Image (tube, rainbow, N blue to C red):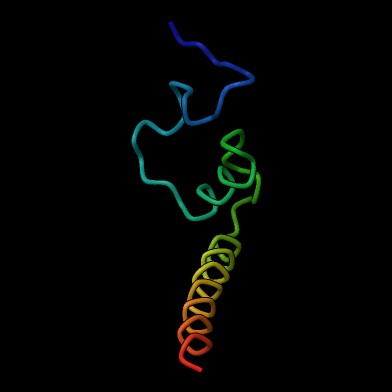
Length: 72
């Protein structure tokens, strides 16, 4: 029996991706929609890379800022 729950997360549906690897777009779409929709950002792979690079840049900036300003 397959159950498609409309209020549940997309990842808990039986037909989500059958353990196939997901793209950065799908991962960020699931993050931003709280797991409801894995296609919210579309098919452009550059969008997923943009959010990944923004996250990495923010983390590196905060770490460098913390190291610099705590040593002053």
